[in-house]
Amino acid sequence: MKRLSLLRTLFHLSGVLIPLIYVLWGAPLVLALIASAIVLVTIVEVLRIKGRINLAFVRPHLKTEEMKRPTGSLFYLISCLATILLFPQPIATASILVLAIADPLSSIIGSKWGRTPFFGKSAEGTGAFFFSSLLVLACFPFPWSHLAPAAGAAAAGELFSSRFVDDNLTIPLVCALALTVLGR
Image (tube, rainbow, N blue to C red; front, side, top):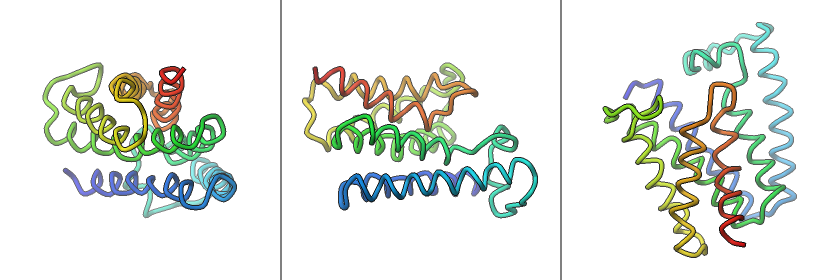
């Protein structure tokens, strides 16, 4: 794996901090932190995209499509905010952790061992996403019968996200919605 991909992946894995703060210190603190981060990241992204600031340390780590649009970090924060506001704590926490853990793992597996094309990605990366989602969800008190459908929904949210809808936005929301529907 290229150094660039590894640094992006490690940054992506740092996303476990939001659900950790949520579990340890509760919704008011994590929501305030996320809202503040959204404001700050939005300002920086607008300035970066308009060319008003040059973030030399960020540029080498951007995907081509992120040069002229917001990075996944903004979408991650927005989806965390929405997921925490819309769903109960165990569902929100599990769904955000699925994004923070399964998405970078699928990227590692897909880029290193992915050989089988699958809807524009690799079957190996998608399989890694599904199975790591299962493991994350199994750490929560959900019925076993809900794990595979929720992991499948999250994998579909990642797989079918388009260039217009970032997977950082879809994964936690789709996973949380699946867990909610399955729980009824």
